[in-house]
Length: 353
Image 1 (tube, rainbow, N blue to C red):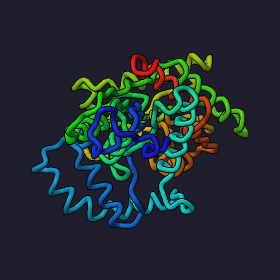
Image 2: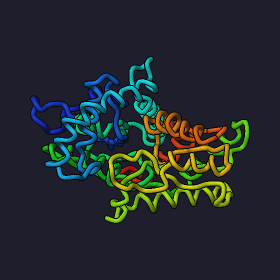
Image 3: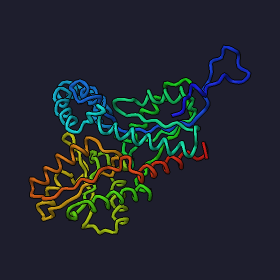
Image 4: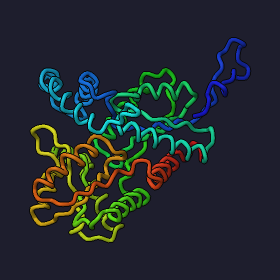
């Protein structure tokens, strides 16, 4: 990131006591879901309290939901979630894998943007929940001279509980600025050819490294309540399209790939089939070797490293499955960074190109 203080200058014709002003730049702010600061009880409680209080995530009446959340869920769940985070925690850096990977993605995208635009851009990242907060990073970019900000939620598919709430936090941060920058948000990229190609390459690598070719690939997407689909959320349809495009790119038929949904929470019916049940059904049906990928996640996190690789894997093995292959998220793979950089460049048109 450029040294903004070194580039700050007093405006021409300004009074001698006018403060130096940094050169104008375009800010690129990458956003992911979030991470606790640690896996201890209080860190987990703060993080889960923020996450589960978001009306985009849990839209029950606060009069009903908050007493249950504060007195029951946040009393017990920080222990179980903390144990799950501890099992995957990056102890060397003392941070979650999601934060480690997001930092790596940001650094590589920053290099790509620097090579294309020079010091005209600044790239940073934020989290919707936890730290670094969206508000703090918006403030930092503005203080560094960014009079235009491109906000990029790192979700290939649009959902109210992901892209929309990330945008909400961004817009809320802008509301607090006296001099707001010009702002743009990036649309979903679930059907882009370069994104599908990056996914396909990761599947091909995973299959090439497997001891035996999997019988079927499950594309496991984070679930949402079925009710959200009925209310007009396009997430389900976009996930189905990604799987179809991936199937076509790989040259497969319907017997080799399918869409499933994971991470069900609460009593409602969610999008189905549920991954944890489907892997068991496949094993009982004779498909003893399966692979699972997670196209809706731009970086490996608790839902992939712990839920898929441990809980869902166990469900498969208990049903008689023999070989379980988890294909990692695209993370900071070169093809993924190139696809994300292409998305950014297209959305910067008119500002820099």
